[in-house]
Length: 360
Image: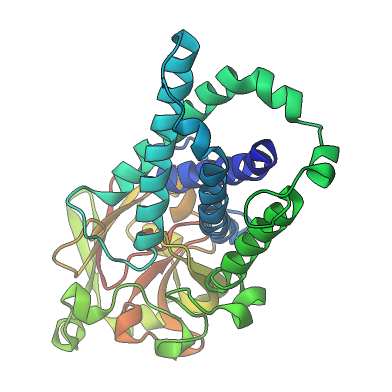
């Protein structure tokens, strides 16, 4: 039974790890040599899978711990070097996994009751989990191999205390994992939206029927800050050009369907209309594919400034968006202008843009 639970838990952890590393590298300028811009929903899919596999891993991990806890209480706990490796790896794996899944789940609600930085801690815990898991599998490999194909044992095994057969227990665990996924994955995948009961975000809600993760009030943006006096400042080699919202509206516009895909796991596609960023680069006289630094009116926050690599700045679908679903942007969606680019995390789709500067 423990081996069978491991068959489910292992792929869930591996998928969660790979998609989490992908998300982390996308948020670190210069971490990836190539940026996956197509399909435009690649990050939406990746982060949705990250959320789903992370949530599914919670009941699977609890069931696996339940299946092995008598062995964890064995006395004496250490009898040889093999026991040191086995117990050390499992202690590290269990502790790191419980912390990782707990803070990951709490993060989806944007609640941070701990003193350490979430993203960096989440990232390094992931490596700790995978490393300890690989070590534990290596130590237990002979036992795993012995039980890997013993499916008949699941049918003929005696009933444990409580009257459950092993097959019945595995079915219950599988149904529990399915239930928690179905009741939360609707914030990431539209076809599951009707089943979304417990997720903190729901699609087609919020201003202009699109959720927001950080409102203007939370960011300290007042209507006065984006009034008639607002100007977009374009900077290249010490020269600057300022454009009003009316002047931006006279430039050639493009419209694309792009998803807002948040690192907390929720996402939704919408129609965005605005000025292609590559046209702004050309307007400044800068080379195509220049790296940009984009600054928000937001005065604080880790993402008030964003670096945009040339792969995005020269893409035709990267917009300085002025409209959402055929209407001017709501203040909570970044009025008067925000960035929308294909395949990027939502935290890098800067809202309330004040300046675009060419770095090189």
